[in-house]
Structures are given as structure tokens and as C-alpha cells.
Length: 299
Image (cartoon, rainbow, N blue to C red; front, side, top):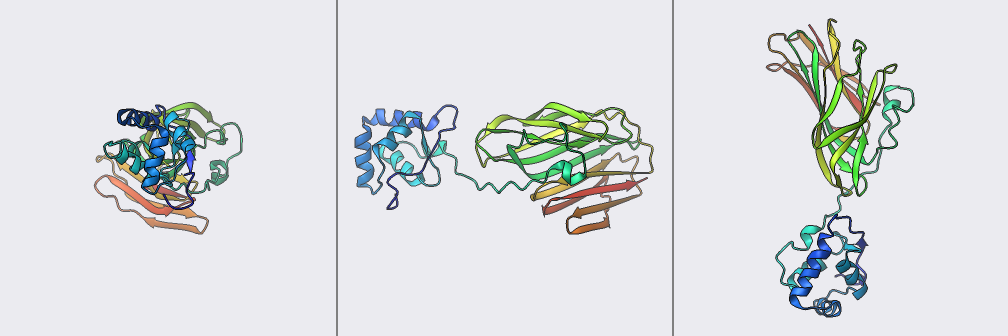
């Protein structure tokens, strides 16, 4: 432990089972060591840790910060003759969590602020990447959207975030939305006047701050029969993201004659043709947002 680190930074033990404390107690009992004798042996190896700190670690009241006390925990593993990672494996190194710079979805797309567009109650996760995969059938109808996201926890215990899906004007009722991978969609509300659905995405398990998780959710059972000559599908990024993509898969029996992508940011708009490869049209932007990507196709 570096000089001046007599009281290593400690953080609340957020693990449900107190795995670090349990492993430390078991190792000390097996070796027949008291807290004071463990402290002395650590001091002999150049690590100054108070008995009070060791007591908190042993009781589960606190656990070492993985960033500032990783070396001393490795030393404890050696002193207790524990296998590598018996203690350090229960710690999570803190990942950098970028400042929350989300633009409210309602502001970005020009919607009225109300109970449906309010997302302040579920902002525990930040979106790091987003992809929408749309499926169009042989009659030209959009039958399914799959939205794939990578989320990062903003706080310990993070589990929920508000997500949004627009309702096409021709739809007489909202499509069915549901979780597919790693999440459920709960508290689903809609605003038919503004043509918007807001589910709350709830992870299957809570995350520690900085942890990443991949989820998929979908919308199906769209009720409208699309008869227009063109159609637009898109994805909004309300914060800077590593990757944002739009993919549209067409039935091979009914391919569009032309596809166009539009990328909109505060800096302006880019419009360009998109090639249909096999039966798919797509566009991906990296280090993108806030902004919106859309793909329009014509029959």
C-alpha cells in the first residue's frame, strides 16, 4: 500500500451475499489468524491497514474499493493461502461512468411533456449503443421491430430505464411490446394523441455502478395495413453513444426499389442512398449522438 494510504478507500458492500466478507472470514478461521495478527503481517509486507478497516471488511459492513485496495487484497489472499481471486474475484473494478448528458426524448422529437413522456423516474441506466432491426413482410407491412441496447449502470443497484417507441399514424392501436433478452417491459403507457409508447425497461438483475449489460426488446402485432408508396424507420440517440444502427429486413419476394438514409444532428442533415444487400438495408454511425438515423424505402 502506498505511503499515506493508512485507511484505504472503502465502499459499501453492495453484493447480495457479502461474498468478500464470507471469503475473508473463512480464510482467517482456516489459518487461525486474528484481525490484529493479520494487520501485523500486512504491515511487515509494507501495507498499512487499520484493524478497524479490517473489521469492517470481515463483518461485511464495508468492502475494499477495487481501485485503491486491490494490491492489499492480493496480499491478504497470499497470507491466508487462498487461491488467486478468492477475494479479488468478489470485487468489481469501478468503470468510468460518463456524465449523464441525455437530452429528454420529448425535447428531441418535439413532444409535449406529460405523464407519458416523463422519464425522470427511471434514469438508472445510460444507453451506450442502440440498434433497431425491423422486419417487413411480403405485403410491405412492418411486422416486428427488435431494439438491441447496451446499457451502463449509473448507480449501484441500477435496474430500470424509460424507453420510447413511436406509433405510426396508420396504427389504430399500439403494438405489443415485450422483453426478449435480459429484461422485461413494465409500466407500459401510451399517448395516442402524440403517437408514443413509453415502457419501463427492467433488467432481470440489478447492476453495480459502471457495469454493462445487453438487452433486446421488441414490438409486434402492428395493427395497420401499410399501403403508402414509401415508409420510414429510424432510431433516436438522446446522448453520445458508441454505436447507433438501423437495419431493415425485407421479404425477398417484395424488395424496395430504392432506400435512402438520413442522419440528423445539431450540425445539420446528411441524406444519401443506401444499397439493398440481399434483402437488407442498413446504416450505422459510430461515436454518434445526440441525433437521429432514419432509413426510408419506396416500393
